[in-house]
Amino acid sequence: MSIVAVDKSLRPDQRRNTFEPPPEVVTTPCDPWPRPYYLEDGLRRVLPYYYTYNTNCKERWRGREILDIFGSEFRDRPVEYYKDAIQNGKVIVNGNAVPTTQIIKNGDVISHTLHRHEPPVTAQPIGIVHEDNDMIVINKPAGVPVHPAGRYNYNSIVEIMRAERGMGWNPLPCNRLDRLTSGIMFIGKHRRAADEMTVQIKGRTVKKEYIARVSGEFPEGEVVCSQPILQISPKLGLNRVRANGKEARTVFRRLAYYPPQEHETGDEGQDGGGSNSLAGETNGTAGTNADTKGMSWKAKKGYSIVRCLPLTGRTHQLRVHLQFLGHPISNDPIYSNQKVFGSSLGSFDDSASADEDIIARLSRMGKDEVAEAVAYHDEMVDDYNKRKAEKMTGKLCDICDTALYSDPGVHELGIYLHAKRYACEEGKWAYETPLPEWAMPPPGMVGPVEATPDTDPLVEGIEKLVVDDKAQVKDVETDKPAANGAG
Image (cartoon, rainbow, N blue to C red; front, side, top):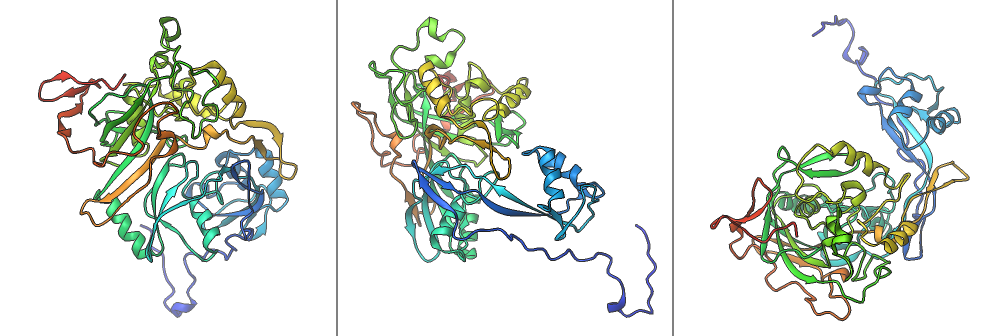
């Protein structure tokens, strides 16, 4: 610790402050209202708009030139763009234009005004399940992020609800759903209500039930997966089963199984949204030795509707556990992607040996390759979805030279995972949605149109089933293999 002499002859108000306060900078000089939404082709779109980001100097930026910071830390645009933006005053420091060699110091505020392009999301409205003076319970549409993040800003649950209810209204989400997941969410109307609900959810005093549509015939009975989960790549949102991961436990119970219909062809399910027949859920001709050699996922005929009860709350927990059990969500762009995970789709794989290759392949999706939303099992549907999927078009914006993406295909706007029911363990409240369209019986087939009255899968000796270290579902009492999750 250094010792600094202080001139005591000066009054306290005359002594120089050790740190100068940060400069006053307008938070968002470009923030259009009303929001520039428009609906087209079943999508909620946002007209490109100017927006200003303000960033306080991070410790690792101190003493570095501003162009070096942008070129190394903000990689979504080429360094030539940032050089031009600094020289033309689109990037400023403390409200003032600076040269590209400007040294950034502690306390600086860097502002970047840019022409922003947001991806479209579904035009499906946000459903209201319940509303009172404290809380709004919504049915979140799939494909819409909860908070502004990454390429999404106004196309988020928070901003869409703000646009509907007024600029001064501040929605306070109490639970988190992935962008691709639909279902129950709690939006607090004021801080006290939001904090109380958040504490309940984090304290594991709330029972949750999800519905998923997975590849193949999921085993009957209750299946528990207790495999720990580790985040492999925060940037790509990739999580895997790993022995050194965080504790995770999920209970699964099959609600229905729909075998492939013999008359299905490769064209069925092209829309990939609400249809009840989709690529990734093979048709009646799949499954021969010639077809399945080296491609085990092709042997998974049909699909299952599965009830999921997470007993812990890890990121991507249901998606990772279902992949590990050999029955991934059939249109999951990450965990059901054969071009990323290979022919086994990561079934019963807890090894880290291929992680670097998996990360490299996943990072290419949506750039020089199509951002696949399913491990396609049929070449005709594969070709159709490739033509409809989001990818870079090779075109640039006339105003800002931003690389432009094509519209996402309907099959990319969400996955078959839905938060169906949340209930207080003490029985004080419970909220539930109907089954989503993709979980209903396909045309010409009979199946449940609602979950059973018993909505808690933990009713029948669930502790009998565990997933042992060898990744097999077993009956603890008899030590005999039970229904194998690998299909």
